[in-house]
Image (cartoon, rainbow, N blue to C red; front, side, top):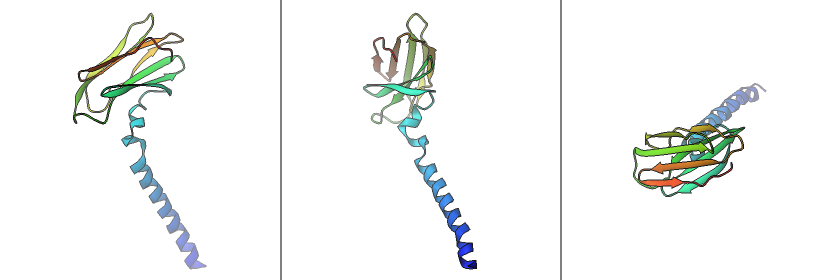
Amino acid sequence: MSGRGARRPMALGLVVLTAAGLLTLAGPAGSAEAAASSCAGRKVRTLAFTGGAVHVHRSGRRVCAVTVRGKGGKKGRTWMMVSLRARGGAAVRHQGSARRQTLPVTVHAGRRPVLIKAAIGSMHYTSRWIRV
């Protein structure tokens, strides 16, 4: 009985360490979904264009957008931009040099449609007025 009692805590410890290691390796930090997780709420649209995509999230009456670079193309930092405008309101914009994604921009849209603009390097994207 003393042998079996000593093995249980060691086996439990091994299971906990293995699970922690797997969570560290397979966690969201390396995935494309984690790149867009800087916006609150649920993802409602992904607007793809040459060079990347714009992930659009909604949380209540707020809409958030972030431009994410595609896997292809050159490595390193490149110029990126994302702009979000609710109809009747001012545009909120973020631009700058980044490796993977822009910072998120958020507007209070309520039930109004939004206009989204994005750019990665020389590739530009402009949506139509969309309801999210």
